[in-house]
Image (tube, rainbow, N blue to C red; front, side):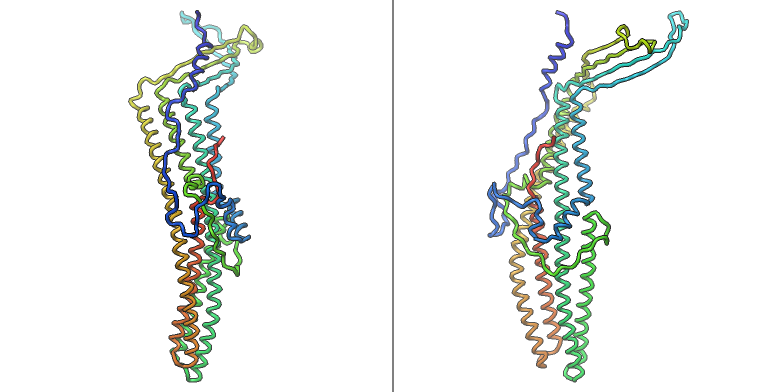
Length: 469
């Protein structure tokens, strides 16, 4: 029976379903059943229970904050760069997928030359015109190309997760800067009220000094307290300007192009919705990105292993060739060829073995990175949960301390007016009251930042690593 090339090609195509290398499975990782540092009132979610919404910052109920986050999502340059990297990864999928199909090249050429006979005489100069098509198709017998496509798809999934992680980070940065700015406004209002009290105390002390009741030292003490508090107020202006500059840059603008007007209210401390510990593996984009990179590294092992096997390429070409272009496209001048070609590296001094070892080591490193990312995710959640629990207790105690300091300030002021204590006692009591109220605002600021940190640590919004086409 004569050999039939097409029959042989059909047989090798049937072998194309084989793909060497390990099939991917997510690395096993046991997660805790509950968060250790969860406050008593903070319950775990049921699997079907909704978590933090996509626009999670709306829990602060501030329309201006909503606009600032929306502007940052549109123009932040870190988000723009991450989006470009994701689009680049998606485009690479197309290049990997194209390698599975035959390529087709066309050519048109014209050449003029001379040839010599065996006796050395030169024949007549001849012109050769040629029109042809050529095609080459690598049959993916061992799955090298499919593993490459698998790796590219996983890398695109990692790029999508990276984009989500950058977006979440920018959102959290905007919210934290805005909340700090509002606490700064509250501190400025506190200092305004305090300066009003200090100015009245300074005026009363000067009047008492002029009446011979108070000493000049009392006047100097009252003025020192007044001026130092004014300096604190000026210093808060520096912090506010820096926060406005940070918000502008986060929105993709130059510092000073935008400003945030002062507000009268203090941000409300929201309650964070509950979540299951295992939900971190699905909702945190950095965890999803690390897992997709494990999948990509696993596929690269198959690519490296396929290099030990021969490559089969089917080459085809055809066209017309003649010395006269007018008669070029005619049957007598047609040519064609079709046939398979096997290629196998016989000796490479261990290069392929080393490449496979590199692929396996890269996979092991990506698995370790994935597990470390998960561990870090749980640590961040536990840190913020612990911070919120302790800060709530500390703020309750601080509220009691503030009440006592205000009462002490009122009593000392009355005693000073009655002439039973010096102004030094008044200044000490007033400074204690101011420090207590500022400490209370600082604790609120830390609670707000820890709340944002917890939402970010929980993944912000529901995010699932979907398949990338």
